[in-house]
Length: 434
Image 1 (cartoon, helix red, strand yellow):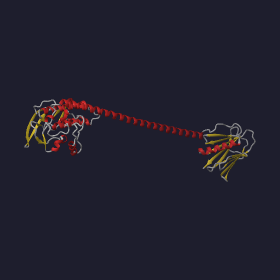
Image 2 (image 1 turned 135 degrees about the horizontal axis):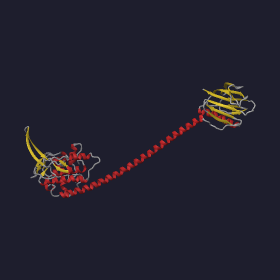
Image 3 (image 1 turned 90 degrees about the vertical axis):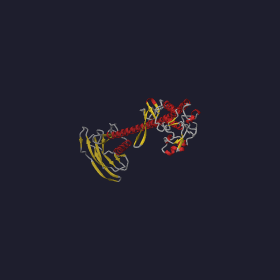
Image 4 (image 1 turned 45 degrees about the vertical axis):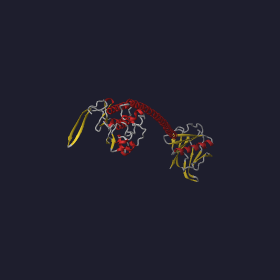
């Protein structure tokens, strides 16, 4: 082994034998390859994301593997255990074949026992189990498996079950090549055909005669397969982009719908707030701003701080309608009190006015008698009256005021009678009770 001198064969520095505990041992001192073995390299590439592995990278290793194995076969040396863990790597993608622990010299074709790693054994070695015909076929098979692993970063046969792995190897179709697809079936590389048969002349099973044809075929097949792989990847990329585009459109449409719903909800909320505000304003500000300057009635209703004015016109029809509006507003806004101002022209003779509130809902103006009623609920109330004089003074004692409450035929009834004397107008305060 020390005589071997090739850049793709590990440099053997020395060989030693020694005895320990009654056992004899054999040791080999070799050149150190700092990048480890091919097996660990393939595993690291399998886990690499994104994968950085090109056809030129694969060919660079394949060419060195074939060159090293060709050198051994030219010297009639069979390695017998070609596999990634026995192939070492150095700087700059340097590759060397190492671990010659079970190698042998092929001076003559002979029968020997089967040795090597199970998932790198050729079919005939597995089938014969106990012994095999020593030939270059073993190395050629192992080389083909390694070429497949360099190209595709995986083993062509290995599965979780050892038994199934062995079956896969033995049942490999004859028209397949060692790397599964990179090496095409070609007469110039018949020595690399998967299903190697025992008894094939060794001259057809070594790399020394047709290495150039082998490398050319490997390169051509690599280019075709990689081109096809790129096309498939491009198609997958286009399909992926199409799906991404569709999903993006769906997401955008959903986002638009959500924005529309948010806007609609915000507008609805704003509208509700504005409506509530307006209703509140209606409760606390003027419903009608028109003030009757002639004879007529001004009905004021609200609390002590806010007064809302609703003018009552002189005609019977308008008066009835306006009075109805007042009490509809009372029910709508939940007012607790109505202040009524009954105005007279100056100089009008004193007259008697009578106000009546009762149910059911019916309004009329008859003989200066106003009836206001509500069919939704019974009304309980108390009244007070103030005589407002032309000089602005207010008297709480109004001549002729009467306040009567009794049960009428249609519910609670109250009658207020007031005689106008010297005031400008009389104001009645009607306070609704629970």
